[in-house]
Amino acid sequence: MQRTEILTQNQVIGLIEFILSDSKNELYESYSDMEKEIIRFSNSTEFYDYLLKGILNNVRNFTFGIYNPASKGKFNISKIELNPKYCKGNTYRYRIDGWAIIFIDLKLVTNSNDVECRVSVNSKKELKIGYIQILNYGIGRMLKALLEK
Image (cartoon, rainbow, N blue to C red; front, side):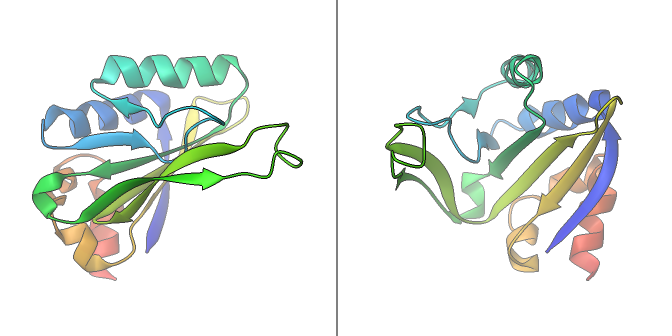
């Protein structure tokens, strides 16, 4: 299940601040860079710095996962083996896996302050477990729509 909305960059930062304001929530990049560890964001400043560095390096797509251990879902970090022949000599990277994870995909809109924000979950059950507090934020319209489907 997924839903997409257009947000401003300030709304995205506000969303991340809201998510990280609950100390139980964990925010991770979904996939690591090649041959690097997965990044876990402890605060919105770390996230903002990550986003700014990406933008300066012409990155336009970012994917993150929110996990709350209180959901009693399943969360792990898996190593993906890569074929160096097709990956510029790189042999591995990491990704987050499991259930009760909300994924957020951000796509920066060219020549704009807008960000296409897609929120996805595997099922309503996963969305309901541990993440209802996000419904109180502006992105809640998106998540609420997922619950109502």
